[in-house]
Length: 229
Length: 296
Image (tube, rainbow over all chains, first blue to last red):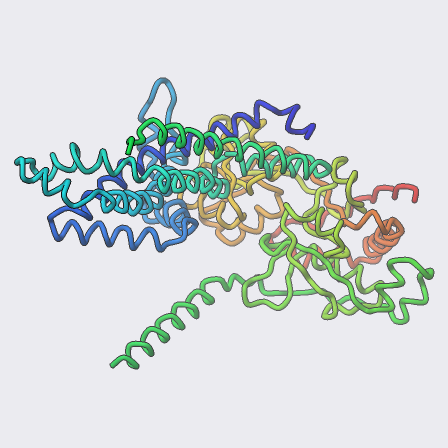
């Protein structure tokens, strides 16, 4: 434990990167996943099939394989995403490594987000969509104004599980050049072989806190948007 | 029809697997040195010592690395690991009357070397195991049997020529390794990967600027790609490789030191080096002097 306490800034930085990966790829996969879900329930048959193919492809591929593809195969093929390093956000340059990790996590997680979202859409009674159509709403309008707001309520618990899984999946990036919590834990144990258990506990607690924050905030949101029946 | 399809699927999977097996066959040639196996070795050790037990049972389990060419490497199709560390293991086993083919090899990675020794999963760890004070708190480390230092592996056309040039560049090594911490201290952005071979790929594809670890390992990779890769910078750290043993068996230290000192004197050490690390073209160095064993 001493190793962690005397290097507490390193510990915080490591979890900062873990949270950074989680937040960026979490938002990106919520957006992409919702778009995919809309395509899957939408009226255009070719888009239905495209979205279904996406889900089949990425949900059935182990996350590690996606990482290997993006980090090892793509640079060999000439796609190394170095261009993102020219973009500056609030004085910080995004590293290509961070971008690639977020890309891998987003591609994988959005397939799960899509399916969770679809279950929410299916939970909305069909009459709602029909009523929307009856008053002359287009598909896009009835989706954004009627269906998705109701679906969002129903999907909070399964979406929380997807997000918690994402938070823990960021640890895969440890083996792909990102010094996030798991990578830093390995560095700590390597330097302090005598404090292995203490270091492990400190990092396990860190992950528990991150996950607890996610599940507590989902609980709060759930209470806030609950419909009185 | 159904049958044909099933057969086709099986054939495809089989083909894919056999191709995968081909892809991994990164064999180093597999030269080994001949060691002279001691006969009736059990008589030489006192009753109740760990060495006596090994000699009597004729069995010993040694943990080595499987992914470091020259140091400890085992391809997917190889029966036995090859490299300088396994050679040292054979020398030690021979003094117990155990032939090389009777040694049980086990892969140890950097992360599990201490737990494996503490739990008795392996009897010895010879796995590019740098001697440090922290490690000596929890396990025994006899040696050093080899001293190396950290260097950089870069592309042939790289601008990196001295240690000052790494500031702000991205440098790859194995996640959590000492090398990665050292290069971070030099101002480089550390990029940890799971294995050294993945790092080499990153250097070759240009996603990182350099790779760093002990010079011996880098020379092995540079020798595989002499047109594209080169090793630069004088060694900027000192790694003293030791043989790990369990603190429950402190008597092993003196035996390891005596056996290896003898091997250094009679030329077995040189032979082992030339057959493994020496293949990359480096001169055989002077064998290092061993540390005193702690008083039991």
